[in-house]
Image (cartoon, rainbow, N blue to C red; front, side, top):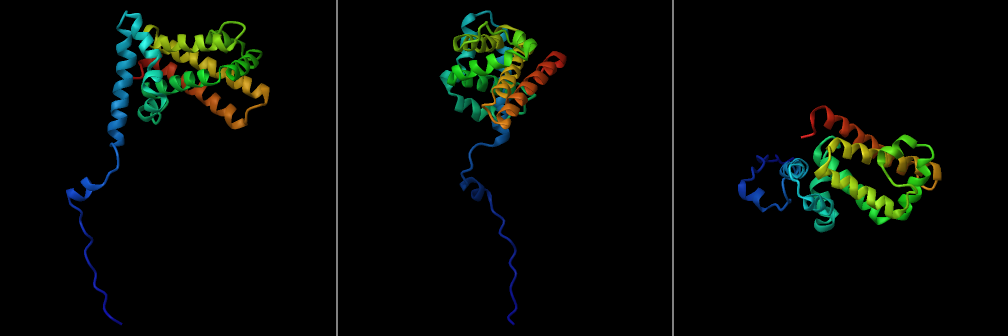
Length: 198
C-alpha cells in the first residue's frame, strides 16, 4: 500500500475573500437599519412640519416595501426597526386587500370590543375607513407617542385575528400569525413606555 502524503490545508489570503461576492455584511445592514429606524421615529417627532408625517406615512410607497424589508424585516420585534417593519407591513396589507381586511375587522368587532375601541376605526369599518385608520396610525410615528402608535396597531391586529377565527376562512396558521403580530406590537408598546426601544 502506498503511503499517502498529507498536505497542510491552504490558508487563503485577502485576495481569496475579496474575490467572493457575498453581498453586504449582515451586521452592517442591521446597524444601518437600526440607525434609520431611530432617526425616523425620534427625529420625526422633533419636527412640527406636517409634511414630515406625510413623508413617514408614504415611505413604503416611495421606497418600496421590498427596500424596507431588506433593511428591517430581520430585526427583532422589540426593536424600533422591527416595529417599523411590522407597521409598514400592516399598512401594505390593508392597502392590498381593504375589502378583505374590512370583512375580517368587522367580524372581529363582535367579540373584541375593547381592542376595536383602542384601534380607533370608524363604524362601520369599511375599506376606506380602514385605510384612513392605518394611515392615521403611521402618521402618529411623527406626531404622537410611539407607544400609542404600537398599541393602536396591536389592537387592530387583535381584532383582525379574532375576525379571521370567527369567519373560519383563514387557516389556523394565519390567525396565529396575526395574533402574534398583535402580541409583538403590544409588548413593544409596553417596552417603549417603560424605557424606550432605542
